[in-house]
Length: 482
Image 1: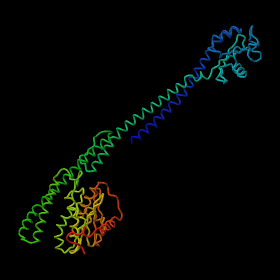
Image 2: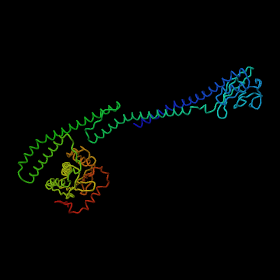
Image 3: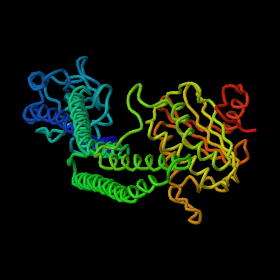
Image 4: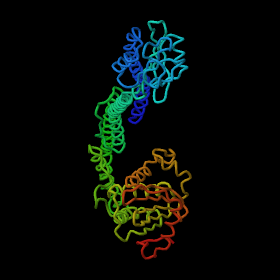
């Protein structure tokens, strides 16, 4: 917008300057020409009274010498009007029919004769300039012609300077208009730029981003609307957190009853597992309430050294789910979790993502279906693979969409959305494909340096090759698949 205003101002000002400067320059040239010939007419008029009184050569020479500013005047007297002392001697110029010429003749005889016949002044072009031919009536009734030479330097005297001044004024006007247009453009562009920056900051999650109300009326109204929208977004998020906290708080009463009932189950592995599950559920509900009540959204990780040990989290969650797998006759495997693997993700977020994926395995596959969790540590990324030997997912895109559960199996699609947001918070992604076990494989790509993960085609095959080439001693924990 700024450069557009500058270009428009430059074009308009240039057209105006040309429209006025060119005619004014031509007028100045004509004025200089008229001034030069007006001076020539005054010099010729100074000789006319003397010619009307006498035609004596000596007298006329004195008059011409006193009237002319230089040697540019000549007097042409016809032969019949020549007085004493006139003739066609050696000092006389080339006259017509024995005429007397005083001074240097520059005009042609034809031009002089034409002026005598017409009886009015005329100009003629000669070498180096022009001549003014002024007819004067003598006492004898004859017509003498006074010739005044006007050099080209007098015709153009001051024209170049005037044109230079006009060009300088025009250039100054153009530069001034461009500068003013640029300042006006800055006043319009800066509020628009701040509005764009505020929109980007709000899109990045900086809920405190606001735009100063300044600039033209349109941009001021846009800034007011943006600030109102940002306030509304903050209020909606606050309402959502309050709603999540309230809904989570309502779960405490049935959880308390459930915890009391588990006390009457007695001893045994099943009772211990049930009590552990209830305690874990209570902790998760408390975490949800505290997070929802927090006015500042929590991030996955911040600063160097933040995050967790993915291998430790995988071992911990598999220790929890392995007991249920043993009850259902499921065979399972963990690979790559024998060494520490640091990732820029909060421990609770990774645990929630693993629980969501493993919970889907137990919920959507039949009892006895095998599953596996593989952890691959690379230079710039960490890959977590959760695979099973179930029937697979017919529509992975629909499964990745938030809230697109089938409605018949109790699925809401939120579990995969939790996993997706975890990966995207680091610049990674999530993909669903077929596993080597014959069922579904969910790949979580966690970027270590925060860069956006590039699109990798055929990457799952490369993961499988690395997994197959890993020694068996490093991928088996306490149980393995046949």
